[in-house]
Each structure stands twice: as C-alpha cells, then as structure tokens.
Amino acid sequence: MNILGIETSCDETAAAVVCTTGDTARPWKCLSNVIASQFDVHREWGGVVPELASRQHVRDICGVVERALADAACAWTDIDALAVTQGPGLVGSLLVGVSFAKAAAASLGRPVIPVHHLAGHIESIWLDHGDIPLPAVVLVVSGGHTSLYEVRSRGTYRLVGRTRDDAAGEAYDKVARLLGLGYPGGPVVDRRARHGNDRAVALPRPRFTGPSRSKPHLEGMTEFSFSGLKSAAVRLLQQRMQNGPLSDAEVDDVCASFQRVVVETLVDRTFHTAAAVGAKSVGIAGGVSANSRLRADAIAYGRERGVPVFVPALSLSTDNAAMIAAAGLRRLELGEMSDLGFNADPSLKMGK
Ligand code: KG4
Ligand code: ZN
Image (tube, rainbow, N blue to C red; front, top):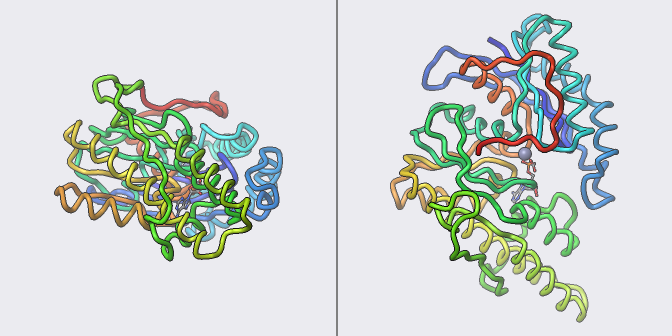
C-alpha cells in the first residue's frame, strides 16, 4: 500500500510517499520526502507570519506533491490513501493541506486520514526504527510543544507531562533572536554551542516540587517550564549588551550554557518519567530532537541505565510529511477511517 502524506501546519509545505513492506519488524518504508521551506519568506520578520505562510503554501503545494510522487516513481493512481495534518497549527496553513488532500482523495476515490501533528512526530520514530520495545515514553519537543507521551501499544498516546509555559524550541528561537543569530534559532545555537564553554554563564535550571498539574500522581518531575530560563537569558543579555556587542566567543559561551540547561532538563524529566511508568525504551521526536547535544546526552544516559533511546534521522526530526503518512498508516492499521467531513483544527488535542 502507498500512502501520500501532506503537512502544511506551519511554515513548511511538505509531501511524502510511504509504503507498507509486509515486514513486521520494519513495516513502513519512505519512498519520497519533499519539503519546501519558507525560511526565506519569514526570515526578515524574525518569525513566521501566518498570512504569508498560507499564501506560500498555496503557491507550493501542487509542485511539492508532484515532486513527491515523481521521487517515489508513483502515478496518482498508485496512491491507495492520503494522510494530512488536521492540527494543531496555523489555521490558514492547515486549510491549504486539508483542502488539497480532501480534493485529491475525492477525485481519486481514495480514503483520506486526518492526523494530529504530534502523532506524526511520534510515528517518525517507528518509521525510522521499526518496532521499539513497549511500553515507551516519547518526548515530543518542538517549536510549539514539549510533551511526554506514554505509548503502551502501537498508535496509543497517553499524555503524561508537558510544559507549563513555553516550548523548548520557542526558548531556543528567542535566545537566538536576541543574539542576532536569525530564525529559526535552534540549529544555529546548536552549532555555536559546540565551540563554547557550557559553564561560562550561570542560568537557572527549572525545578518543581509541587504535584504535576496534568498528572498529579507523577509529581512535577514530568513537567517542563522554560519561561524562567528564557527570561533569565533575556535579562542577562540585555544587561551585558549595555556594554557593547558580545564577542564571538561570548556568544558561543551563552549558546553552550543555555543549551546545557535545556538538554539536562529534557533528559532528566524524560528518564524520570520513563522510570515512573516502567518504560522499556525512550523516544525523542520533534524539531529540537535534531539537537546534537540532546541526541548524544540522551543516548549516553539511556545506555548507562540500560534503556534504549530512539531518535529519528535528521530528515524526519523537523516538520516533514513522511511522519504524517506514517501516522496515517497507523490509524488505518487500527481500523480508523474518516469521511470528508473533517476540517482543519488549529487547537486539535491529542491524549488526555
Ligand atoms: O517540529 P518542528 O520542525 O516544528 C514545530 O512543530 O514546531 O520544530 C521546530 C523547532 C524550532 O523551534 C527550531 O529552532 C527547533 O525546532 N530546532 C532545533 C534544532 N533544529 C530545529 N532546536 C535545537 N537544536 C537544533 N539542532
Ligand atoms: Zn512539528
């Protein structure tokens, strides 16, 4: 079976074809994965401008889908089903993908499966690694989300923790903006951090002692907070900049120190949650999972504790449509279908 995935939730127009293999250990294979990035459109504004994003999706969607079909050596008639991001995201952006997918499905007479964006990030782990030991705890960490899900059986996601305020990616982007490193900031901070001293600048590490709001029995150790760290970094930089611009070495040090605190927090909370729910493996997905230190530290931490860690390849970490196709295949495998009555939902929820 070939499924065409479409993702337009934010500032990337993406389409991909994923097929089933019949191999139970590695049931899915990515045949193409095309992404048209809008970085150049939004860069001068320092962040995503929703109106510009939806207009650019309209311009790009046909070409991106045609390219995904061509790369997969598929004709439209080889597509057995479609999957599309229903939400969460920017409504104008989501609408472009949803309308396109519904129209294509109607004209082909094929089913279309609406998918939650975070289900896509979670399934990117299965797409890349095949089956992983269950139960698993998966950290989804991106520009809009920092959430922990427990996966007891394939395709079921139970929310066990999340950020109380900002997402980790948001904090990365804010610090990068202040340092004049451009947008999106995560990849640049990651690169600059490699040359810096991660103890040079003292930044607070978020700690909770109270019970978790979302899951009282798991206490605060399953929750995240990045707004205090973000504000501390902003204050520190604003004070320092009164004495002139930072040297390259100082920028590297700020990046390294900030990154150490973020990564330590993410790794600590994820493994704490994994131990609390008796997880046999840990997954990390979403744009920030592309971070070199997060990958290295989580894998090392897991190895010390005998818990295998699964992170998708870089091409599947940041927003892409192959993960949406994979999540669509999962829904089909679980017998979940949809008619064409669904619509884009900018605040779509997943998990309880
Ligand atoms: O999943 P994603 O592509 O889009 C959302 O669903 O939000 O994640 C984008 C986020 C941005 O905040 C970006 O700065 C961050 O992921 N990011 C990184 C890295 N690559 C992307 N953060 C830290 N290190 C990276 N290497
Ligand atoms: Zn994402």
